[in-house]
Length: 125
Image (cartoon, rainbow, N blue to C red):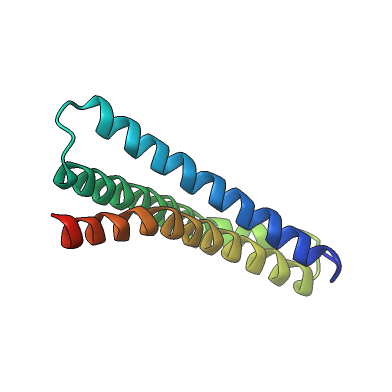
């Protein structure tokens, strides 16, 4: 990726994160509204649980991907090709950092409602 395209890619990434956060909070608000009793404690609990669930999904998906790419079979298959060592190492690093990026995205997406649930509970509960 060229230097000129990096700020645009970051801006697009943050726009997607913000849109996903709004969607998550809309889901939390909808579930809270349709569950019946609308109390601050219930809103705090829902936000906390949904945020923790999103972070859990991110951790499980990252650990599963890391387990499959860290196996001996995967490492051997990736080294058995006719590609030179430099390209194989680059591909390995791209695979590993894409996994870490996905986990970080889930931590951000789940961490904000998680923290909001704690703050709502402490301030208004």
